[in-house]
Each structure stands twice: as C-alpha cells, then as structure tokens.
Amino acid sequence: MFDVIVVGARCAGASLAMLLARGGHRVAVVDRASFPSDTMSTHFLWQRAAFRLRDWGLLDRLHARGCAPIEQITFDVGPVQMSGIGLGVEGQTAVYCPRRTVLDTVLVEAAVEAGAELIDGVVVDDVVWADGRASGVRGRRRGAGGSLSLRAPLVVGADGLHSTVARRVAARVYNHHPPLTCVYYSYWSGLGDVRASFHARTGQLILVWPTNDGLTCIYVGWPRREFARVRTDLDRSFHAALDLVPGLRDTVASGHREQRFVGTADLPNQYRTSVGPGWALLGDAGHHKDPSTGMGIADAFLSADLLAEAIHSARAGRPVDDALGDYPRQRDQLTANGFELALNTARLAPLSNGLTAFYRAAATQPEVVERIFGVLGGSVPIRDVYSAPRIASVLAQANA
Image 1 (tube, rainbow, N blue to C red):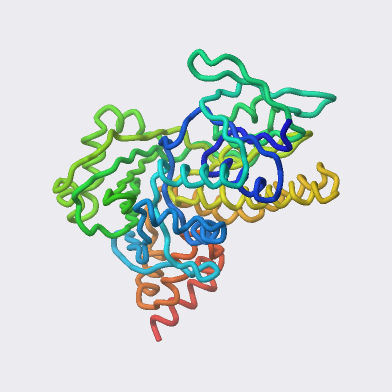
Image 2 (cartoon, rainbow, N blue to C red; image 1 turned 45 degrees about the horizontal axis):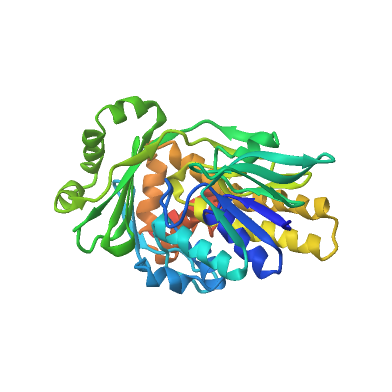
C-alpha cells in the first residue's frame, strides 16, 4: 500500500515522485519504459525550469552529463535579429536544451534516491475504484511478466497527452484549440560552435539548439494543414525550410544527422479537469500546448511543485479534496500567459509592419531585448512587452 501512485515517470511524474518522497510520502512511480529512454518532446529548460532543477539540487547533474548552459540566444524574425537572454529567475539566467534520455534519467534517479519505488516496464490499463474514489491501478508487465495491481488513496496521471488515467476518470477537456502546427526535428553532429537561435518566418518556425554531447537539435514547424505534404518528402521539406535562414543549410550539410526525424501533427492546445475523488492529472495529461515556445517542461516542473504542495498540505491535516482543489486553479492562472503566447506563435502569421517597427526599435534597447526574451521564456507576461502603451514607449524611445 502506497500513499500516492504516480503513473508516468517522465519529467512531470518523476519530479512529483521525488518531491513527495522527499516529504516522507510512500510513492510508487510506474512507467511503461525503462530508463534511460527517449521520448518525443521539446527540449527547452527556460530560466524558470533551470531554477527549479537548481533548487532541487539537480542542475549540476545535468552539467555532468554533457549539457552545457546556453547564455545567449538569437531571436530572428526575418527583417530584424536580436541576441540576448531573458531576465533571470532567482539569479538563474542560463537556459538548457537537454535530451530527454538525460533529463528524465536524472529525475528518475533523484526520485529513487529520495525513496520512491520505480516500477518500470509496466503498462497501466485501468484505475481501480472503491466507494466512488480512485484507489489504485491495474496493469501488466511488458512481455510475459503478468499482471500488476497497486493500491493508494491518490492516483496521479502523469502519463502524457493521451493519458490512460485521464480517460479512465473521464477528465473533461476545456479551453481547447485544435492543432496549429506540425513539427519534425533531429540531431546533428559536427556543426561546430552553433549558437542557440529562434527563426520565425511566415508559415515556418526553425529552432536551432545545442544539446548534449556536442549534438545540435534542429526543429522545424509548419502549419498543420501542410502535414501530408511535408511527410510525403520529409527530407526535402526540412531542408527547404533551412534555406529560409541564410547559411543554415550549408552549416547543416557540413555535419552528420545522427538519428531519424521525429515529429507529429498531434499537438492540441487544451486543459483538462485535473482533480477528482482520489485522482489528479499532471504535466501533458492535464495541460498541453503547441511546442513552438518550448514551455512544456517548465510548466511540468511548475505543476509538480504545485501538486506536491497540495498533497503535503493534505497530509498535514487539510481535507484532501479541498487541498487538491487549489492545484488546478493555481496551474491555470500561472500557465495562462504561456498558453496565449503558444497560440500566437503557432499561428506562424506574417510579421505586421507595426511589429517590425517595434522589433527594430527594441533591438537598440538592451533592457527591452531582455524583456522580449523573458516573454519567450515565460518569466515576463506578454502584456508587459506587447501592450499598446509598452510598444508606443519603445518606439518613442527609439525616435528620441
């Protein structure tokens, strides 16, 4: 018998399991995979995510596994380019782009060290109920390992966008927007000292990020309606996109692609009801958005922190349903800014004359550049940079 069962041991579930185990809870964390293993994902750890890893004592472990800090990013919207980094969060200014083979393993190891029991290689098929409340899960070991049943008064689904737990508890979807982009990415070696960059074009988004062990991750996004065309000749579509960034195709040609392309068009933007009697949802299971802004991991860490605090308060004597009720309200409030930004970015719309003028003016004002990067990273609200009064102020300063 456990206090909490966490279904899914990726960055959301493993973080929660670690935080709960550190707080003295008996935790089982269950995943169909074994670690290290990869999963399709954004890679970005913006400052607020890197700060949480630092606060949890894990950022040095990321360094030790070959993930170097990124201290400057180029933001390129075609007619205007600017370089900088966003406002720091509690002194954390560098960002990171770890592969999930590395990040998830660091988190799983930390959860196990804290006392959580990792049960890997298990597919969860159903939620067990007792007196109208979730009270455990049933599953099966991959291969010929047989069935498995676990019991706990709280079941947390951290099992991704297509969460089995969410389906079994009939969690309601709200604030839903259909997929706006389709994406593919892969990894290249031998590209030399490639800098992190974000290239926005009409109908295209190209991201270039150094990751572990000298590899560079390159990501391309297209409008969702182009998915059939793109995947018909993926290599050609991908390299045609690189041509939109001067010199990038030649840089990529100088290296070697180390892995097949990974991609999807299954990128809905939505929230799910994330608490109920004896259950909660975490990470992409409870909130998912387009990966164009790379905020998914930061929001997974945020949600793990919020849910852990709620569970701790229930253990301290607060009624469990009351304590858990705070969690989705806080999550929705704190992720609303990033949700709006992801929708705006994923539309891949042409840059207006007004925004072009704003970016030209902003590029000459370092403090504004810093805040623009803060918006990209989710540490600065959109309205603090892109409201009409703020834009007018930046333009006036440039004209002065």
